[in-house]
Image 1 (spheres, helix red, strand yellow):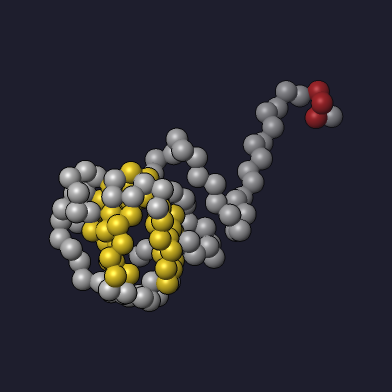
Image 2 (tube, rainbow, N blue to C red):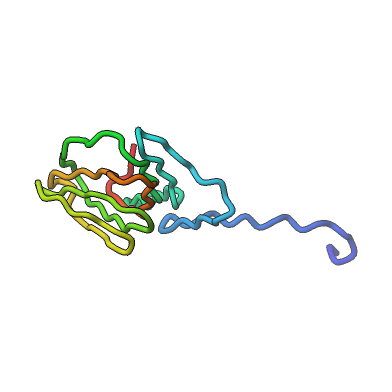
Length: 129
């Protein structure tokens, strides 16, 4: 009987699965500013997912923060600029293409001592509050 009537079909709404998120580039990105750093989140938060992927822009100068440790892991990949990354009391200069991956419980800090903005792709656990 329904074939004789021109009724619009109800749109099918498929809920996103709990095991992944999909974030399109054209969607507005969430950004946070903290001191000399701007964090642009690269994914929505999915239930049960623990990675926090982001692009970080670190302004020149600022203040060198005291190294500290906390729970989790960190990964940073330098896209442009340079970055001093101190890990367990040892300074490492990271240039484009360089990366660092560490247990966050090891005291660490980073500092941009150049005259240009440094851009880093960073993934941390646990997610930022």
